[in-house]
Length: 200
Image 1 (tube, helix red, strand yellow):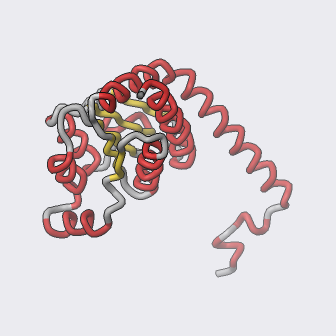
Image 2 (spheres, helix red, strand yellow):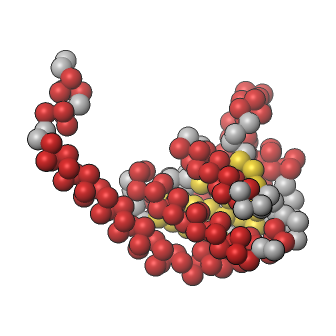
Image 3 (spheres, one colour):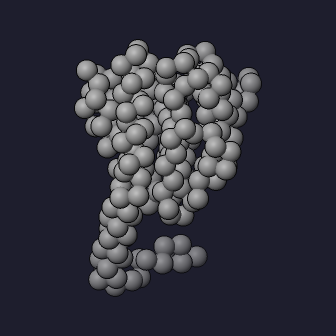
């Protein structure tokens, strides 16, 4: 097996790579503009709800799996650098692996929210599929606790949309994981800015 069999793009003309890169950049930009146009009003309403929660002493708890776990860390960082209380539930490796091993991976976020969250806090779930069991359980627990619930998903929203687990749901209309995460990043960056502008 040759390198070009595993990586067929290696035998393409560099102009094809340039054209492919430009096409992907256009696709990403068009999706982000579409998402902001379609989801902008909902994002503004969500920002007001989050700002009210934080003004009342609440905190943001962000969570997700894989690439979405790093997005959850970015969310927490965006809020904290603006002086707003936030934490990513995916960043404590010892806690996540202990819960996953001792209790079950499907409860790694729900258990943390049960221990740390409460009414007036905010649960922000990030997913590309909207179908991860631990994300769904986390949002369900957040709802039970009376938290403000926010979901970011793609691909039609999956079970996250079907089960109505998020009071504020933002579904990126794409099936590409890359494009979904890029558009979600645009949304949560803007959300952090909108919340900060409304929070003393």
